Length: 152
Image (cartoon, rainbow, N blue to C red; front, side, top):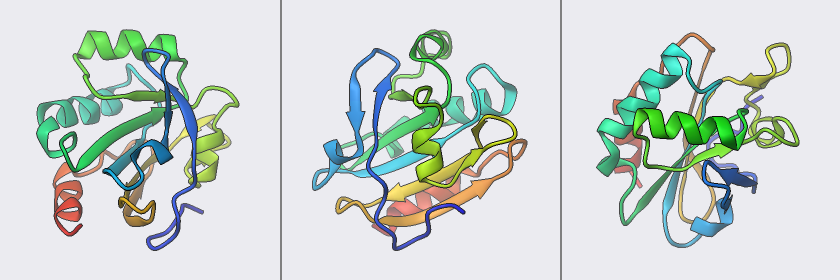
């Protein structure tokens, strides 16, 4: 079951598409975090969602908010994906131990070996303030993220 609103967001430490270490705690006290889990780079719905975020980036990467997108792909795959699609926000690799962060947030599909579409808006104190989890084929509504961020 996915982490619920009001719960403390599980800490994680993942490598981004450039090999840098990113921790949720890096943003504690400084920024709200939009933590977005997606199944795989280079797939239709995922590419569409991540490019829509790219096209609306000022709403998700600014002085108050940081977008972090997580998949179970390797950092090498994520680097090429980000370059190809012009994604200038961190793509985090939950590759090894495979799906550890996805499992901690309750969005890992054991049968498929990847994360489902889970989004968590985490406030500056590390508490989940909004969440949505969609099945693999179902894209999320970006406008819902914006509305949720406006309430923080």
